[in-house]
Amino acid sequence: MVQNTDNRILIHACCGICSGYPIGLLKEMGYSPVVYFYNPNIDTHEEFNRRLEAQKIVCMYHWVDLVAEDYNHEEYLNYVKGYETEPERGARCDKCIELRLIKTAKKAKELGINKFTTSLVISPHKNYDKISAIGKQAAESILNKTESKKELQSEEPSIGLSPLDLPPSNLPPSNLPLEYLPLDFKKKDGFLKTNKLSKELGLYRQNYCGCEFVKK
Ligand code: SF4
Image 1 (cartoon, rainbow, N blue to C red):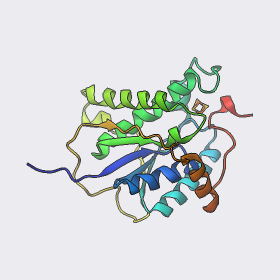
Image 2: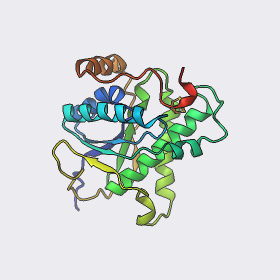
Image 3: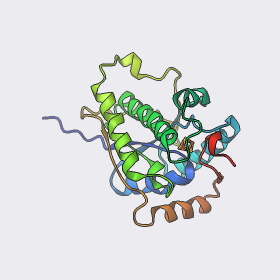
Image 4: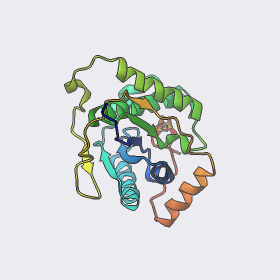
């Protein structure tokens, strides 16, 4: 029997601040995190670039691979159409998180990685149970879909940004089923720790979640 030694996990990173501690924790747990920056919810390209630059610093710090999708705010706006006036933490946010986790599940499948998770849960403004349920549904939706390999690939190729200047991985694809790993990064002062690290690294700090609907 061939043993699966692929310990990679795809972590969806909502921003550099939130993902700093989770990436380190995954490494401590024995995983090889690959970071996925897919955040079409961000309202302007300028803001998107600021957050992506912060994400690159975090990935360099942890020496992990980063896969970033191009900015496509239209994709987000189409997905949350009809929910624009919902309050923060309401149905629009559920849709927004669903969009990002379904895409993360697809990317994990495409890269041959069988586990994925998200840094979104570290925020005290986000509901861990809700996000875990959305993550599990995203994994199931990909598992149950009889998609062709072509359909699983993004319409636009992602930008592979590796500190080692290597492709995201040269490991053979995992043959295990895709799984969302529900980890509550808030535990053990996770939010405090991630903020501390972000200050040490001098990261750009945004003062709103991302979309125009909550910008003050
Ligand atoms: S408030 Fe944040 S989570 Fe909610 S829809 Fe806007 S960007 Fe997405």
